Amino acid sequence: MASVSVVIPNWNGEKELPAALDSLLTQTLKAEFIVVENGSTDGSKELLYGRYPQVTVIPLPFNTGFAGGVNAGLRYSADAGHDYTALLNNDAVADKIWLKNLVEVMHANPHAGIVTSKMISDTGEYLDSTSELYTIWGLPYPRGRREASINKYDEQKNVFGGSGGASLYRQKMLAEIGFFDEDFFAYYEDVDLSFRAQLAGWKVIYAPDAIVRHHIGATSGRVRGFTTYHAMKNLPWLAIKNVPKGLLRKVLPRLFLAYTLFFGRALMRGQGWTALKGSSRMWRLLPKKVMQRRMIQKGRKVSSRYINSILTHDLPPDARSLRSLRSTWWKLRRKSA
Image 1 (cartoon, rainbow, N blue to C red):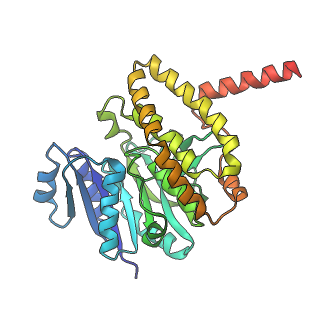
Image 2 (image 1 turned 135 degrees about the vertical axis):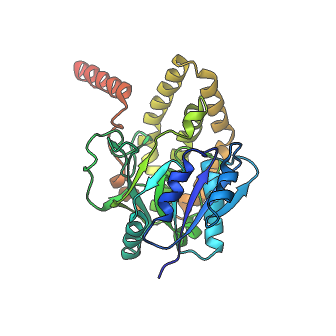
Image 3 (image 1 turned 60 degrees about the vertical axis):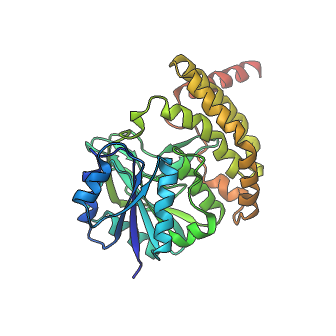
């Protein structure tokens, strides 16, 4: 029988955390439940020690971000001898058989390194994520986000990536490819890990019967400009580290256009300085990411053709401005032909 743990990274989640923990304590599958207390300044620590003595708490002195917090839990789980470790956001609530369903799919598929869940909104009105996709434009996005039909995507299948908000990870895979990249801090670190898994020959499987409800943006929404800063920082790293050489010539020009457009939109929202800081951080650490790329690509076990086959050869559904630019480009080309 596989040994299983569940890690919840928590930063100032006193209000949301009890619902997440209560949903874990009613799971039908036995597991060790771990909360990484990521330097909270609210009453989270008191809540954990006072109401949840059955939960393992890993206290950190300051906020290390989603990636750093999760890594602390993953390392603890590896040292404790757990075979599989699931991640759950502190603002998510899991169905009673959520963990059981994830583990059953993982156990039945030895080639799988990640099994990801169906995430729906906390109100149950629309989907949040049914896996993470990566496009030929260098833009990741959650499949199904904001779609109203929650009964859609009910087929178990191989997908590009798993959401860090509710996925199960094989510790054997993590020992091979490494944990989350802590330079990302938050946003796209789960896509980066999924990309590295795919390059190393592991598969990611979507398990539609593993369901959680998620209060979208409950944590990141507390800090103005949080999303802008980390998106501007992390998007280029994701491509530079992982996209095989043969595909970079397709991805990088498109990503440059999208990145420039995102910067302009940040300016219009009054977040130009935040976007500039994110971009500056990206450039400062770019040599490190190039070095990481060399190691990742050196260990690649799949072909560029395979990676190309699992990319989405279109824009994300909500990329309306880019779609408009692309449409204008093709009209001009047809006129000049």
